[in-house]
Length: 280
Image 1 (cartoon, rainbow, N blue to C red):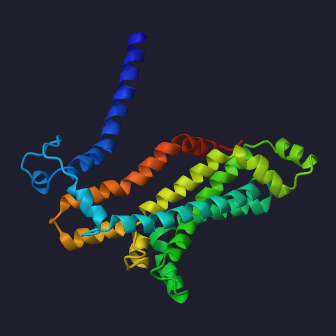
Image 2 (image 1 turned 90 degrees about the vertical axis):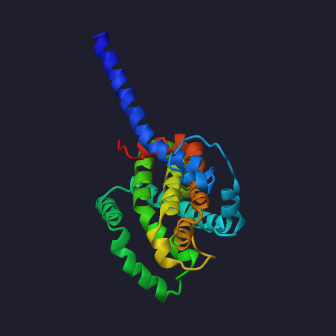
Image 3 (image 1 turned 30 degrees about the vertical axis):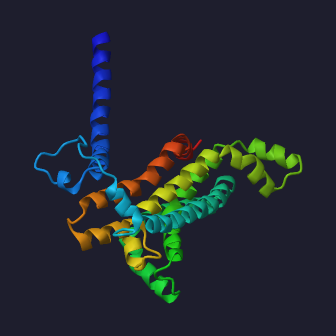
């Protein structure tokens, strides 16, 4: 029995190590290669060691000589922060309503959210482009924020609804007996208990908006609105293999905000996703 359990544990952790290797090795190779010179990157014997390290690629990416990552990341951060904040706000209100007011309407709304979550991506790209032209919102950050709302709100509302259902209604009854109104009860009693859910929803919206490529490609075409993914892709197309080190450094910089956010909010994200997905 002891031998069987030991083999099971070794097999479990061995599988985790293999999976983590597949996940982490590309990112590690990206980081290591961004610190090498272009000659070393294309050497016939690839190496994980940085023998001739350089930060010139990062200076090139941040300095605006070939790729102005500062402007690109600024544009992307504005869009993603607005998307996360608006998504969390409306998901909180709609999720609370669906959790507390049960009936046929609530069930229909949940089904509608699931259907809306399935109708995404290229299926609605042409209608969004037509809307952007009619409202003169092409090549603006506003249209990106609006689009990302439709992509993130269905899942966000569903998660927050499940999270609110786990909050006892007795707490609201006690607050209302003390004279608190519905809005005061929500902001002072319920929201502090659902902070992990709000963080999870905001982080989910931020990451989805940050990783988007297709809508940013179609809806923006100027440097003042272009996002980091589009900027890197356009430099790759225009420069080819002239400065792969700089492009790799830009890739590292593009990943850093998401990694830092996930590291800081990992505990809230796991709590929010698990609690919001469970219905008592």
